[in-house]
Length: 315
Image 1 (cartoon, rainbow, N blue to C red):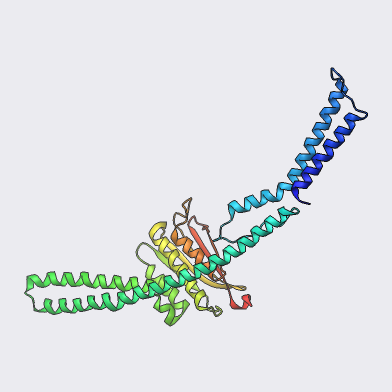
Image 2: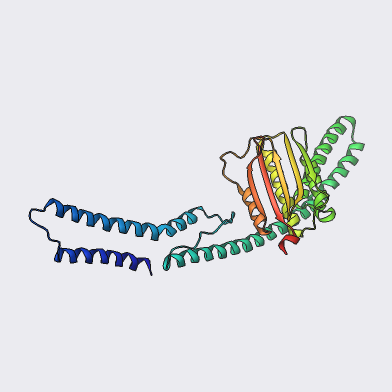
């Protein structure tokens, strides 16, 4: 029975009963006697209590639905509110769950298209940096070397300094191109790509240790790319914002999942809002059905944990 009719009928029963009693054995004197006042007060209290109980029971599913509406995040899929209540209340909750399923599917599809376009654009930019800017700087280096060898001694030192600056710029462009397009991932696989990534971020101020298991199951191209990008974004955030001195990168197989963990000893996330980088990591994880958890590390830093289901588990 719809909620409206349940509340209406309960009120009608109470009012009809009170009217029948007033017209029958129950009368009200003037002035009102104490017993009559007690009876009327008790009847009113009973009606209010009955209404309150019915409303509490009938509206409880709507309160759960309201909480679910305020806490739902499409980047963090969770449990759906249980379908409870009767009539239109249960229908409303079921409709909300269906809407969430559709929104998550649409967001996953749009995220897949956006990430595919992003990777294509990264490849294009990396190719242009390598083929055009890189080759131009290489030609400039050769010209500087030829001119420097023929220049008089005072100008030769200055030309050599310009040559070193140009060489450093060329190395930086090549490094940016490698980050935009992980050629080592395409050519040598995920293990070599992660080892190269750890070596790239290791420096005087940051030590990156890595442990990559040798018994990893075969993963799809998308899954390997997501693992690499999440590791890359995590190390980038650590190097830029965490103020850490040590990072541990591990990749291992646990049951039906492959788990990536990047843990540092920096200042941690604190109460900072998630930026575009972390949101991008969550969207990539949703793209392959993986679970991404960011939280505090045991030593006070940040712990990034990505669990990717294997093909055996998905079958």
